[in-house]
Length: 111
Image 1 (tube, helix red, strand yellow):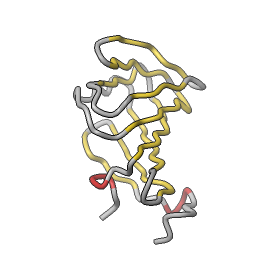
Image 2 (image 1 turned 180 degrees about the vertical axis):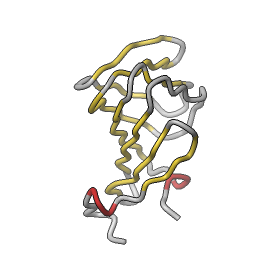
Image 3 (image 1 turned 45 degrees about the horizontal axis):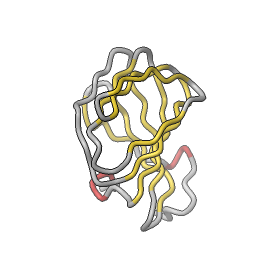
Image 4 (image 1 turned 90 degrees about the vertical axis):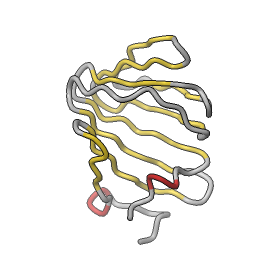
């Protein structure tokens, strides 16, 4: 699959955990665009990774804890998670989020 141009209908959906759907969109060797859909009341595990992460909330409302500080972010809001910083997200309502990771998440590559 050409990863430079990805049409919505061509994106592979993965369900890495209950309540979350992940679609890896366009990417190259330096950065990766990922769309996540969260069901209302989904709670993700606290984690960290070496990748820088830019987040844009397309729809809905989520609560994020980044480095021990909690924020509610809604459609149109964005934030940054620096690589190595512990963070956690939960969906206050059904939500759609776009993430840009750099470098790319090898563990997210469609199989």
